[in-house]
Image (cartoon, rainbow, N blue to C red; front, top):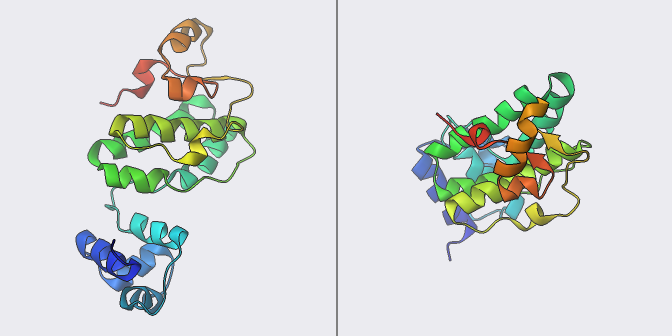
Length: 188
């Protein structure tokens, strides 16, 4: 097992970034990153995940589902279903270019409840959906029974699409009351 200091150094080296850049991306100081790398300071698991996400390729729009959940809640409240689902599409696009290790970092931390049961259900469904696609274990927080959309959310709001959404929605979303057609998950 790699010790945390070696892990931070290795992640940063693989990302090809300086301590200063890692500190900027992770929202900490260069001195703190230096202390993590030297072993003078041991990061807790949450901090280590934050540092690892900061080492993800810069093209990734959503470094974690903890950042995505409130954005979905805001988009649904201000703009409606389509803009909110586009945010999910951005995660799916990022995933197409990422690795299983990237996915594990994106889904690792449990998002805080947003007050929007639909946004909370979507991120849990997405975590399970991505896990299944990558063949990795779903995070424990994704099985939280409280993360269910009430009322159910049909992403395609037109009533004509409801039967198709009920039939085609992946289990990871449907069990949480989120229904989307297979076309809604296809990325071009």
